[in-house]
Length: 91
Image 1: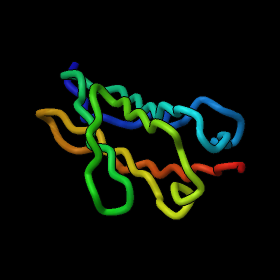
Image 2: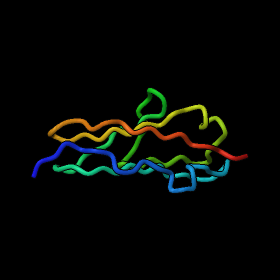
Image 3: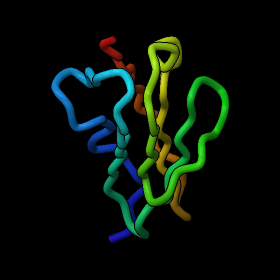
């Protein structure tokens, strides 16, 4: 069965995507689809360096709240719908 990808989860893994300033945060995007999808993760309009649907933010700061993150899965069948993520940083 061949399927275009669809995002299943896009999260920091924390309650309501709230994190503590100065910590390391891993943003994870997962999707179904066959063949297995690759992922494009963006911060605002800029593609960030992500691997396998994972993006690590070291020493997160309050300014990260200003950006919307998006994940877009792709495979040879097509591109799935984007999913957005807003991170809340507590000082």
